Amino acid sequence: MKETKYWTGHILAGAALLFLLGFHFIYTHIAFLFGTEDNITESLSKGRDAQPVFLVFFIALLGLGLYHGLYGLKNILSELITCENCRKIVAIILTVVGILLFAFGSYSSFVAHKNATGMKNTVSRLEVNNG
Amino acid sequence: MAETKTIKFHIRRYDPKKDKEPYFKTYDVPFQPGMVVLDALHYIRENYDPSLAWRYSCRMGVCGSCGMLINGSPTLACNTQVATLGGTEITIAPLPNFDIVKDLVPELSKMFEKHVAVSPFIVRDEKELDDEKGEYYQTEHQLEQYLQLTYCIRCGCCMAACPTLATDPDYLGPMPLSQAHRYNVDTRDGGRKTRNEKTGSSHGAFKCHFAGECSRVCPKGADPAKAIQHMKRQLVFDFLHLIKNQKPCEKQHGPGNEPKKDVPPAPPYTV
Amino acid sequence: MAEFTRFDNRLGILGWLGKGKWGLERYLYILHRLTGLAILFYFMMHIFVTSLRAYGIYLWTEGNFFHQPIFRIGEFLVFAAFAFHAFNGLRLVFVELGFAVGKPIEPIFPYETCISKQRPLLVVMMLLSAVLFAMGGYELIMALGR
Image (cartoon, rainbow over all chains, first blue to last red; front, side):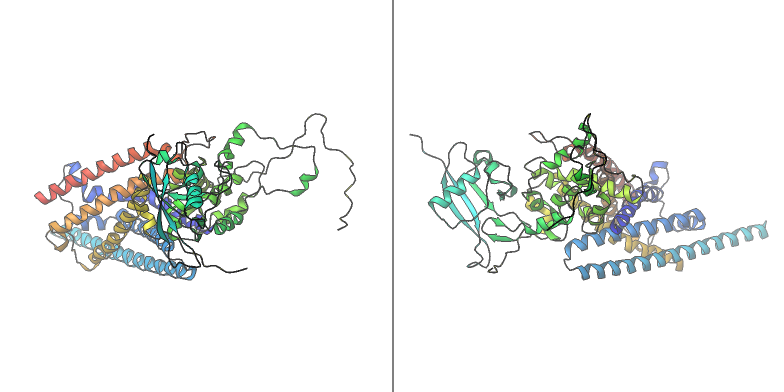
């Protein structure tokens, strides 16, 4: 029944990704729908990093995307590899890769969030001092 | 007199005692109206090569012995009219995804081992068997849940068409999975949770990705792909505790057939 | 009993393709795998590249390396893969949970299978995927024009 648990997670993560990635594409690429131009600028990216809601969003996207993608890859590889031990080794390698990428990605998001909020605070402090 | 049409049959031959690899050999067979592929194989054996081997029994699509790859599609030789195949050349090979025993004879034992592994029988308390006057009643709706799957003749065509089995020999496959589902949805059965251990494992139902080939080639319309998708829902719902573990239905007694009271226990076994 | 050798007749990875003789769902299943692998590859690169922003490196934004037209076209291909994978995946969620394949019926010749039952859903999903694809294409043309 372990596989049932993993597969249910895979399907639920897939369904959630449809909405999360849809939103991600809307604010990065399909912005023309809302009359705005190219959204891929450094200042807009920093603006997003400064908002806690985007931090949660990035980490959710990262975790769900990695789980859905790497489970899919494990499924494909386990159908191509016929030796049971090799299948287990592949599953362990993919889990480790997933955890490392998740740790790296979420750490970077935290740092970027901290930098962006720090900068925003500095700007607002400067504004107060100048004002 | 009109000239008889001749059909070229390209047949994949393999003799484990002589050949390292299978090879194709061509035979000319005169066409007759109403001829099925099985007739053509008989013609070849009687007129060209008595060593040609294939498996068959009933000649009418009931026993499931003569499954083979005809023009690239797994189907029954007794059920396939030569006229409907069209053209003057027909290619016949053994069912893929099974080992070849000889010529067109596939080794089906691995499929049957997987079939046995999913407990393809009604699992319940054996004591009820002693109550010979009781009967299991099912409504038409309850019968319909599994009726389609009882039409399966275990010919192995679905296993030959399955893309997952093309690379993964450990996958249970459409026939065993759909037969497990046949008993899972039977109201007399109480073995679903036990079967879930096997069908919900890493070689079970989740290796089906709905390419749909099994249902497309099934010569009896048993639709194994549908059963596997329904099975997946049951597995997921069981995991999420959304289905109550229903007890199997009990024997019922018509008027005058009530279970006897104060029946002395059966004597102990003497053998 | 004498032991005979058995010839392994498994089709291997070419069996996934079915030598061009199979139904539409088979090809969607292959395409779903290929687009999934492509998206996963891009996603892992994307995690790495965007994570560099923590160190002040913005390679993908306006005026930087990955903002060149060739990468924008590459991104559009990933978007196209997403458009297919997302909607075909949504169809698979419905189908694989047994909601779009019909109820059990008695098989009467000519047999109707679950394949034909889920076809309307397939058509709707592919149309939605085409709409998303067109939106991505429009965005690409706009971006390249700027």
